[in-house]
Length: 111
Image (cartoon, rainbow, N blue to C red; front, side, top):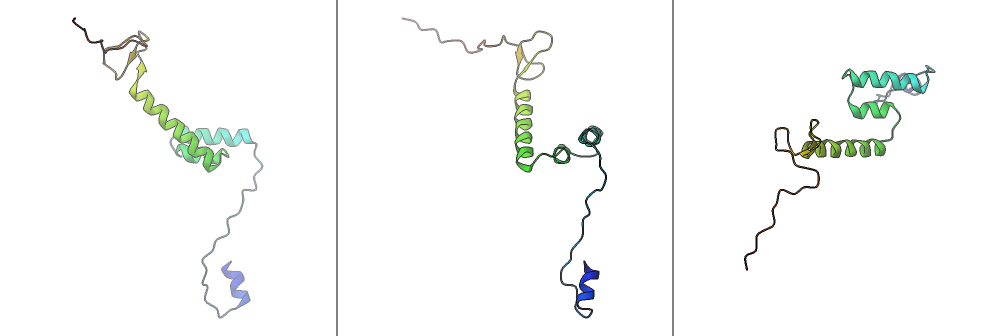
């Protein structure tokens, strides 16, 4: 762009810094792009947000996916099923309780 501006007015100072970004001319299928993106993400070369963008998701969709992922991770840390018994535990090593069981005992009322 600076070269084009020089031809317009050779004495003018370039006042705008610009760059031309060319589109990729390769014609690869969506499956090939998805496979490459998944491999980059799995190897740790790109973060999840970049992988989602490369797969064609919009910024709104990416934000929603990331929010869902964050809430699932939080729920996974708060309560999980013990793989051996299927009982609910809050943290590894905690005493397991039956799903739906309450640790709070009702107060005893004496008349």
